[in-house]
Image (cartoon, rainbow, N blue to C red; front, side, top):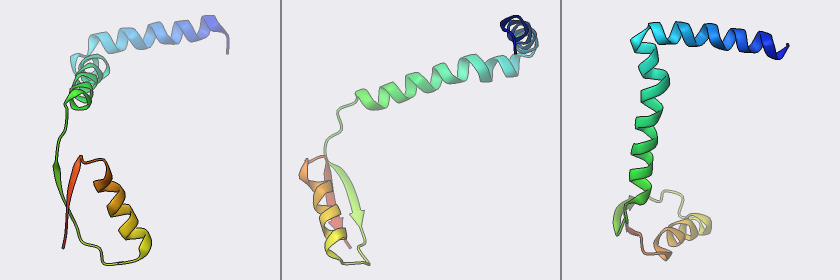
Length: 80
């Protein structure tokens, strides 16, 4: 496909999107809102998140996984 044909298709799609406000919201505003929300989540300094673990397996690997969760101190794990 040639570059001119792709530009013509992009121009046509942009015209269609700019006519419909719902589509414009979904294409432009929604990703910007999502970006702000996700960046806000990762900026917060999370401390001591309570986490309940019901270890039905009881194997070495599952106990090691729970120990790895508690190693950095961000999670407080309660076993059921």
